[in-house]
Amino acid sequence: MGQYYKIVNLDKKEYLHPHKFGDGLKLLEFGCSSQGTLTALTLLLAKGNGRGGGDYPSNNPLIGSWAGDRIVIVGDYYDDEKKDDPRFCGLYDKVSNGGEYQDISNSVATMVKLIEGG
Image 1 (cartoon, helix red, strand yellow):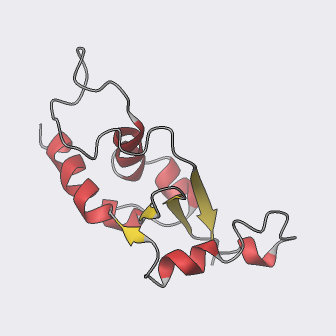
Image 2 (cartoon, rainbow, N blue to C red):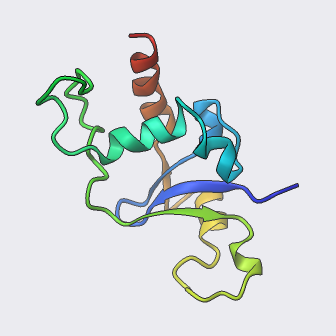
């Protein structure tokens, strides 16, 4: 089966779901993707976009909105491990069950698709 992951912003209580970018949920399924989840994360973390050649030509407020925040790529098996850091115990399930954390994947995926379309 394998372990599934989500990218979580602990400060903003937001997350990215790799399936919404056309990627698999396993670490290397989205970690090796040339477009999709990692492109989305790159845009969220980018500081100074729009000031030079090769930048994404947009003033979308999502670009750079995660810069400086605490980000974790958390797996659903984390609870089965030695639980060395209680901040992450149950985090995957907490994110997956909705409520406290907001899935911003659709908004970011729309932005990423604009890049792919040129």
